Image (cartoon, rainbow, N blue to C red; front, side):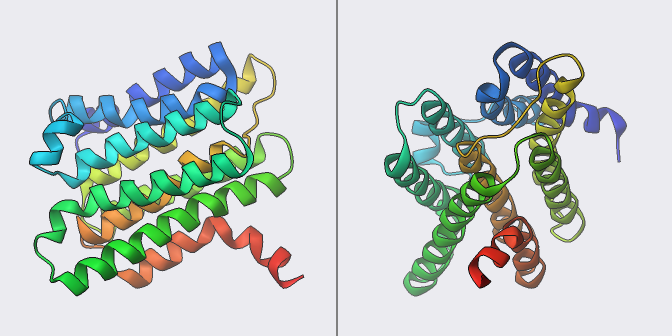
Length: 244
């Protein structure tokens, strides 16, 4: 693998995370996590089409970039207390569902009506449950840097799985950029006050995690057994609560 290509994929995300989190703390992390892969895509490919252009000529990978931006904006709104509680959760679900439909929109043309309903509907449910599940995990997680470190590992595994089993280098690099941003944010604890994720961060984390895996299935060649295992890993912390 070309080392220059790898650096183009991760350095923008690392730099943006170090800058934004050092300046504004965790409340700006979601913006770095969305902007990092966006800049990486520009360096590796080209400037992605704007949403109104993608509406006429859909591209699942570019819609995924804009979905990350939307998830980041929802997270920022919740940090700013402009949305909270059930309203925040409802907005999170809405973004998850719409994002799934947009990412899969190009593939829909190759499916029958029943297949389209099944793939888009089940995909939207997966992404929405992932976002709500990540929010629940963070609500119950201990304060401190450990949850951020664990989610960095999860996103890194997503990237590796998408590249190796899904055979999509670009998609894996973009996912790796999100992981790099989160990892860099953890690193800011070396020179500023302790870093900790909030419930609001579950929105962008859950949407990013599920959308990259889902894209690995439909845009790449990732099989559902592997995808299901990867999707479930971050939510295993909820099992003792549900059983108990």
